Image 1 (cartoon, helix red, strand yellow):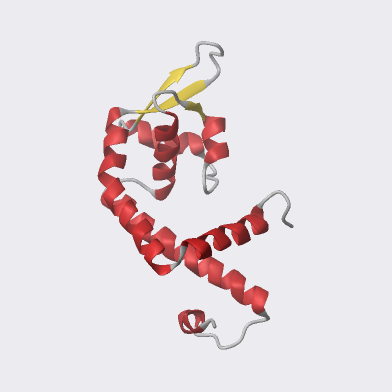
Image 2 (cartoon, helix red, strand yellow):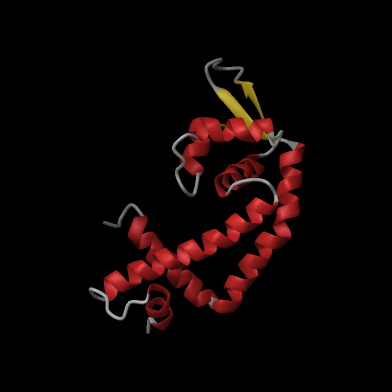
Length: 156
């Protein structure tokens, strides 16, 4: 076990199975992230921007506040306000002040943002299909269980 990791890192020994598993998890995550990054780049957005658009598509036509977007992001971005500013410049999102609290800004995905996600979907789906071809549903569930053990509320 671990031949791919040994070759990738050009390392023959690890501190133990937990260390090897952690490195494998990090390498696998980077592999998937690089694939998604490449798709995003061809559509003129970053992975973080894709994440925001994906979040807003899920709540469309309603929107979310910056705080709610931040809470739902896969990877926490240090400055979500600037991230949203850049999406607004590209006309992929629209912002307006909340009717209940004028201090609160609500961001919604625009028609153009929905179109970008629709154009990206075949490529993103292809990545998902390739993953599904490499691991069984049972292994995918086990991987999810293990990952949630690492970062979930009952984990360390």
